[in-house]
Structure formats: C-alpha cells, structure tokens
Amino acid sequence: MAVERTLSIIKPDAVEKKKVGAILAMLEDAGFSILALRRQHLSREVAEGFYAVHKERGFFRELVTFMTRSPVVIAVLERDDAVKQYRGVMGATDPAEAAANTIRKAFGANKGENAVHGSDSVENARIEIAYFFPASEVAPSA
Ligand code: GDP
Image (tube, rainbow, N blue to C red):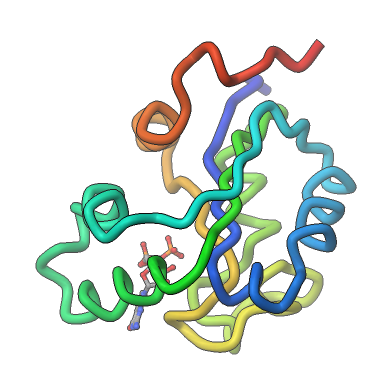
C-alpha cells in the first residue's frame, strides 16, 4: 500500500469545544504521522478559495461563514493509504450517519458543523496541502 499524504482541518466547532488534542490523539492512534500543523483564523478570501469547488452549492455562503467564524487547526497527515484511511476515521459528512468511533460521530454537531475536513482524493490532497503549506513547512516523517 502506497504511503500518501492528506490534509486535515479541525473546523471551528471542534476547536471551540477544545477537541483539538482529542482529535490529534485519534489520528495518531490510527497510525497517522503529523508532518505539519498550524492554527489559523481563515479569512473569507482564503476559505472561499479553499472551497471554490462548492461555490455553486446552496450551502456555500453558510460554509464560508462557519469556517471563518473562529480559528481552525490545519494538519498534513501521512500513512499508507492515507486519503481513504482518514476518510474512514473522519466518518460520513452528516455526523448522524457517521459510524461509531469516527471523529464526526464523536464531535460533529450536524451536516455543516461536522468537526473536520479531509481531502477526498490523492490529487486533491496534493492541491489542498500546497494551498496551506509551502513544501519547506512539511517536515519528513523520519
Ligand atoms: P465532506 O467531503 O464529507 O466534507 O463533504 P462535502 O465535500 O460534500 O462538503 C464539504 C463540507 O460542506 C462539509 O464537510 C460540510 O461542512 C459542508 N456541507 C455539506 N453539506 C452541507 C449542507 O447541506 N449544509 C451545510 N450548511 N453545510 C454542508
């Protein structure tokens, strides 16, 4: 299985609830290495750019308002099969439908405020990581 990287964002709802440490612990317990980590209050411009693929969706304005209301914690994660494995640990978009022992089941409130973001493909992971971290800020795993 190939070693991959993926982008995780701990969203404002989870940071406000002080679940950053608990979520990072779940990720390390699931075998991910944290290669880069930053707390950042997203500007509207940065959030709109990040979610540009969703700009025609009805919830876009609500999503940007949510993601900019307070700081997030952004991380680059690495392990074998990272994109799929992280989607598994993260859980379904709607926390009510997320499996037991997933981050969204444990900490998500609803379909919008669902605690974490995760890249949905290896190609998007590359784009999303580069959006937030220059290569010089992503330390190798060993
Ligand atoms: P994900 O890949 O599981 O995060 O889901 P999507 O790519 O479909 O949606 C991106 C993000 O938009 C989700 O994680 C939610 O924060 C938000 N979102 C999705 N659907 C809705 C919705 O119906 N209402 C609101 N307010 N936000 C939504």
